[in-house]
Amino acid sequence: MRSRVLALLASALFVASSTGGCDPSTEPYVPPAPVTVVPTGTAEEPQPPPVVESTGAVSLPEGDVPRTLVGDWTGGEGAKTGQFLVIASDGRYARTRAGSQEPEEGVLVVQGSRMTFYLATGEEQTARYEYTNAAGIEVLGITYDAAGYYSYVRA
Image (cartoon, rainbow, N blue to C red; front, side, top):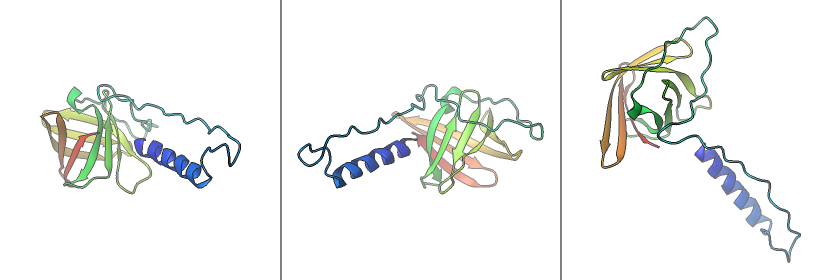
């Protein structure tokens, strides 16, 4: 979302600079179209991500996550970046991988140091996780049983 807002603002600045801006000596002033920014929530209580509702074919469990995991995270495989993970307080999540247009959505259930991502497609991904807060820098490390290690920092 932040990237889209920044891209929109950069585009508006480019248009203004390439058309002479708003200098009244060169052209009449036309006010720009209003830009609406919709907040996505705070780190304490993020907006829940959209989740594909079950149509009867896939039944998702009730989510269960510790409060420390709720919020927006960014990171990727190993030390890579470009992936986003949003976890809501009710366990719903949306994960966007680099290069993907559609988020992967589902429900997250955490038990001890283990977590299971229940995808809206019916697939399950199990992992071990570790949360660290060192001097205000929050890190979420997830080692998927089938996909390896991913690290995220609080966005």
